[in-house]
Image (cartoon, one colour):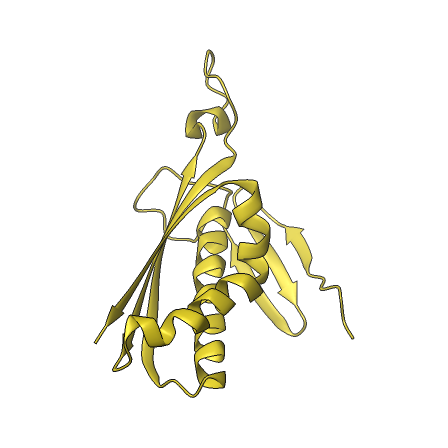
Length: 148
């Protein structure tokens, strides 16, 4: 059984890198970006997206195992850095640009009640590879809402 995954990354400019995964290529922007009009996707944004995708997909899988019909799942993932200005190496700024907290809101579109979905949600949180790591590394606030 596989217990390791590997990607290859090459940087070709000061702001972007290419990630090669099996036969796929993904362009990643700088670690963070302060320009709301930036055309690319930063490394931090891709990480937040990966956390949301992990939870959505894992919840769908667990619900299917419990024979629960889900029409859709949406996650909104917000990350908070300790001090974003530390990334810019601003003189006098203290701390680090480390990710310190996540706020995750998950909305499920289904005819099932929240109580019926609770076991699948608990399993998704327990079996999510990314949440398994991040929940011990930082503050994670979770909000789970079923839209009946």
